[in-house]
Length: 136
Image (cartoon, rainbow, N blue to C red):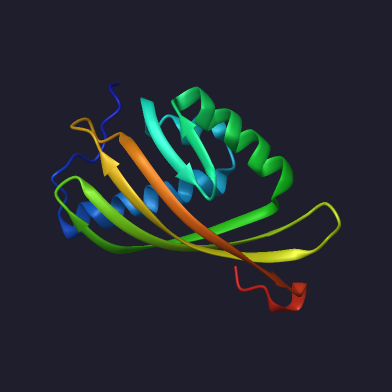
């Protein structure tokens, strides 16, 4: 059976679905699964990292989830137009020493005609929190 992706131009319904699919994939913490949503030559900026191509994305995600333990993410559609979306998110994680963080950020996404993400630009800030203050 052929895999079908939500295709641009997006409607409110398909944009909300796209964001939920991304949230579900990232919460799987499976780099193989997540990287398949991106074009082979995808371009990323994640904090201060510049990442090019699906293989670099996969390597980045492996390292990310080795560092960010018990990762849990929530995404929210901020806006969309044609083949682009703006998304806000927050996620919680702990480091190897048990310190918890809540990371806040915004992403700008651009999709190709097949519904794969070709550009992802993320700005992210981390806030140390106590375990009792976790929300996710």
